[in-house]
Each structure stands twice: as C-alpha cells, then as structure tokens.
Length: 184
Image 1: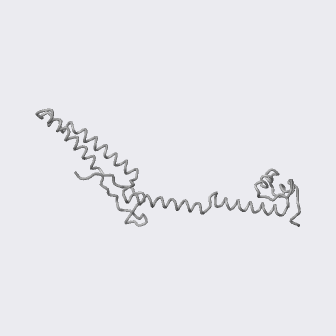
Image 2 (image 1 turned 90 degrees about the vertical axis):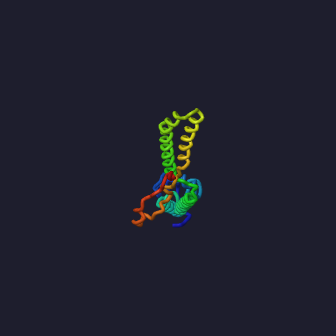
Image 3 (image 1 turned 180 degrees about the vertical axis):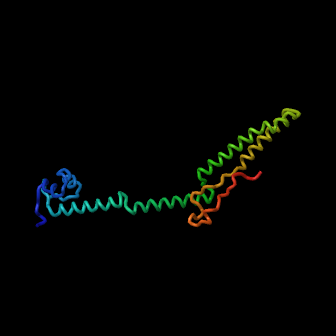
C-alpha cells in the first residue's frame, strides 16, 4: 500500500474506531496528519494515532506529572525540612505544639499565682501601718508573680524531626525530658 493512499473522513473514523468529530479534533490538534479537506493519508494517520495512544498510555502510567517533577518536589521538601531543623537548632524555630504547651503552663501558673496574692498578702496588708506600706506589700506580690512568669522557658519537646533513630530500639526507648520552668 502506498503512503499517498487517501481515504475520506468517515473511513478513517471507522478504521480508528472513533467518531468523525474526534478525528477532526485530533487533526486540528496536530495529532493526525490531514492532506486536504475531508481526505486523509491512511498509513500516516494510523501510525500517528498509534503513537498518540502509546504516548497517552505512558503518561497515564506515570501520571500527569513526570518523574522529574516528583523528584523536584521531594528535593524541595527535604530542603525545607533541613532549613526548619537548622532554624530549630539555632533556637529560631519552636514547634507550635511546644509554644501552646508553654502558654498553657504560663497562664495556669500566672492564674494560680495571682489568685494566691490576696490570701498571702491579706494579713501583711492588714498589719501595715499605712497605705504606702500596704501598696508595697501588694506590689512585691505582683512582682513576684511576674518574675515567675518571666522564668518560664519554651523548650522543644516535639522537634521538627526526631533526633532519635527509630530503627534502633535503644534510642526509641529514651523518654523526652525537657524542663518547662526554671527552678525557683
């Protein structure tokens, strides 16, 4: 059969088992070669359609994204993790859970300390000789509460990436011990 053997649109559609409209769409997209209006060279069209189907099958197996795109995303994610680890080592990054835990500790300590001021200071304030001495007693109690609040430190308990090797059982057994407040 010669490469210049031409057939009409309906014949190409039947041979390729697609609609005539789909043949026109593929021709307009440049997938199928078209000789003239309504005429197609049979051998080149069949070859082009087979190549189109092969390419589509390979793309579906790999997915819309190719291997290089996935690899680039993985490399970027690893770089981001390394950057976060570096920032955490420099104490510039603290995981949100650790900050939330520290705030919970600070708020509960502050609440307890502030609620205890009237009880602890009532007798001293009552025994004060004048208003200035009573103010000083209360001011000292409030300053003590504020100093305790200032002594609370945020420590990393849940690092960005665990520093223990989970494949080694002796490392996985180590508990995480991190103090949240300075000793009084």
